[in-house]
Image 1: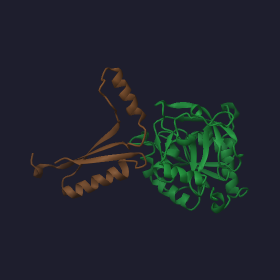
Image 2 (image 1 turned 135 degrees about the vertical axis):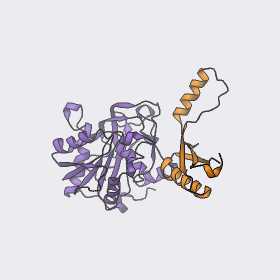
Image 3 (image 1 turned 30 degrees about the vertical axis):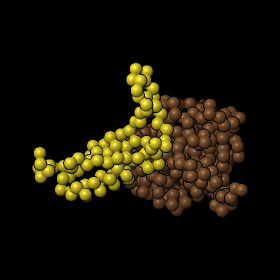
Image 4 (image 1 turned 90 degrees about the horizontal axis):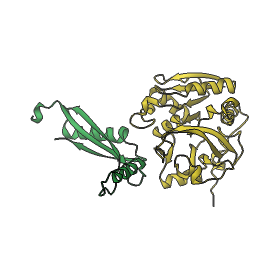
Length: 89
Length: 245
């Protein structure tokens, strides 16, 4: 499907705890994986994934700016979390 | 005096708080709906415990965008008393009215039991009826009460005496064993710089009736009553934050 036919722009936001913040859930999952025999697992961090569809009338730059603002101001608590943003082409 | 108890969808300690201030403390109380912006001339606001908006996204994250919170923020900025209990504390953190954030409990379990709290600062509108170092027994009831803040802010909290209660043993001793959820520096409660906004994970409204095992929570509401009725006046901030050398 060409860009012109798209009605939405997909923004993917990945939120995770900062590296400096202890992640007890990730640690528990890691030890469970080890217990299951996945001996090569060095560490696990748990996070959240948001798939956001934005109106395709936005320019790519405007879509990125809007998604970035959503991620920064709402989806992430900057005290403990960080995020990665990806706009699907 | 009149306590306004905010009701969010998912609040479940609003009735407990209402009952505590009305029946145990003999004060007026009113429920304030989250979609309203009217604080109905309340003298103090309680953000009660529960799971506001299902705690979706993060605990307290959606609630802080509710219309009533705009009014609560303005009220607090004018020096109005705001007490956040459990989920209410989480909402205060998310709204930036208090510093820090809550992580999942260290043991990943939801914990519901009485804990001991040591009183760290009695120079606040919520603790003036307590004694320094006094040990209270008040229940906690949460899955995300593992208080976290960066080192720099922690230092500021300590310097300005904004840590109000710490988890401790029956004698007031601090140890890892008596820290139920892994909170940094055993922190159970903090206040803002002015002392008029306080958040606490334990539930004082569940400790206002001997039938429930403790009446230690009453002193927290009584302190607010003292502050409003003028029988207590907070020392000026400059005195409360005398530099520690």
